[in-house]
Length: 301
Image 1: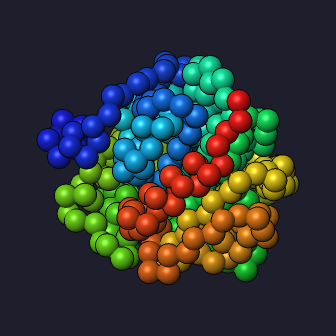
Image 2 (image 1 turned 60 degrees about the vertical axis):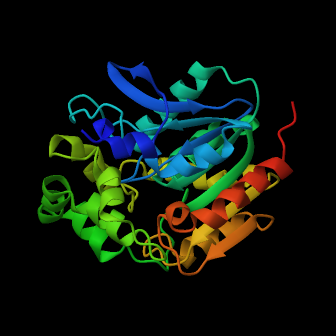
């Protein structure tokens, strides 16, 4: 198991915490003290994605970083044990945040599916949000001018694609290979990203996330995405920071344009030579950007 390797313990030197959700162990990190910052990963990554940001911020902030069920160090149930739906993901997050009894407004830091999960939670609790950091993500439907990339379509809609994802781990491996453009991941780092998804059973969530992309009104989650998108204006007055890798073949300039329309006041940082895993690719620039953003816009008691 990846968590037992010396390199993992060096890269991820954090204490694990768990809460139980309907018999499943939901893993999260709870590092540091101060204003709460909730970091939400996407697919097929996990809390490991935020490891450097955690180290950078934990002296001044309390960092809550969960692994969605089926991901990272959380339990990896079968379909009979868990719905793998967007609605369930939002409920899981709600239980976690309530369990922590946070007494201040929180900051959301989101990437990929973390944006959809986090913002769906946020529109239900707008009074609890202080500021937002967005990285190559969405909380709205696929822009009309953006076709679903062929690789995602194959994985989402075909049995062959499902076999590639669950049988060969092609989605996690592929993301680790193409997700960084400026600084390609080493073989060792790719192993750590893919480590939690080391067999057929442990890749259910990776596949279900892709299959759960809602494209038509009859798709599960479509109405939740619609209602979330309709309420994103609730945060137009808040401090918002956008860090965007422009070589992301999924979350490209179409998604970025939508965010800029929603939040014209946002502080935007573009990384033209970086890919989907922008925090990995442009770490040296992004860590101080986010730290300065948080320190500039302190949460009022």
